Amino acid sequence: VRTIGVLTSGGDAPGMNAAIRAVVRTGIYYGFRVMGIRRGYNGLIEGDIFEMNLRSVSDIIQRGGTILLTARSPEFMTENGLKKAASMCKIFKIDALVVIGGDGSFRGARDLSKFGINVVGIPGTIDNDIACTDYTIGFDTALNTVQDAINKIRDTATSHERVSILEVMGRHAGYIALYSGIAGGAESIVIPEKGLDKDEIIRRIIDGKNKGKLHNLIILAEGIGGATELAKEIEEATGIETRATILGYIQRGGSPTAYDRVVASLMGAKAVEVIKEGKQNRIIAMKDGKIVDYDIDEALSMQKTIDEYMYNLATILSL
Ligand code: F6P
Image (cartoon, rainbow, N blue to C red; front, side, top):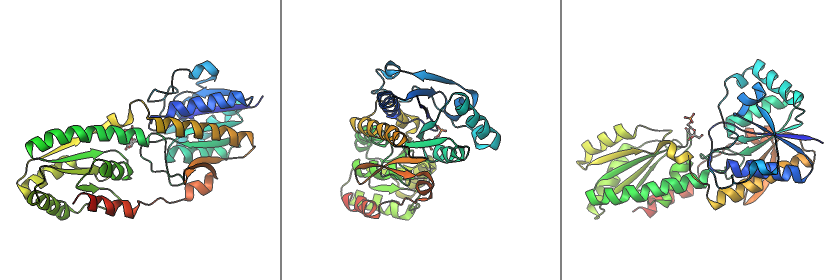
């Protein structure tokens, strides 16, 4: 029997459990042995590895986080760490390793593949910042969490006729900010891909007030950051009370949305299918609504850009 190892790595994302479940259940269905690896690459290096069965993944599809636990592993970045991880794969007879995580985790997987381990990546991060895929598991749930926060902030900000700045996650990328800004009707969306134009934001606030708006919402991506300082500057420049909210880790938790569960299930199954077909070193992705797989080097050399149309539309819709 051939053996598949599965781990989650980097920041957790809602839907990771649904992906683990799909890997375990389809893996066993196709006759593989499936080994769970705890705490990401740290657990792989230390041999924190156990055999999973159909019941190991019962009752987890609806749970946020990851039952396998996760970590960012500095040791795995070293030659020595990689060697230890590769030898653990051999000791536990792991022929193929499924890595559920983000870009950094995939780069680690590629390094490990140089030691003869077949690796397959499944994109799991709330940031949606992986170039080869239109969608990463967890993004939709995070957007819905941000939406809930925006609704609540709107109630109080409108009542006080304030400006509100909501700082959202996304690391160096602005996808969470762009999508939640459109969904939440933000007046300004500030993302690293476009930079910060304070005068433009201030002009929109004053314009909005003159047009009878009771409230002005700015969504700021953490990649630019500085919500609290920006609030002070805006208040000084406009004379309008301005409050900053930094949403933080609340965006990473919660029960995954139906969409995240479905995508995670499809991607988890696809990872097992590519292993079954004998493919080597792949990244699972969504392209134009379909689940596909790319060579890992090709996937990691791709670039992702913000949708200009969406960005411009956000401004028109908030007039
Ligand atoms: O990648 C997901 C993410 O939540 C980013 O949005 C954020 O910048 C980062 O992880 C935070 O990482 P940590 O959990 O190490 O603080």
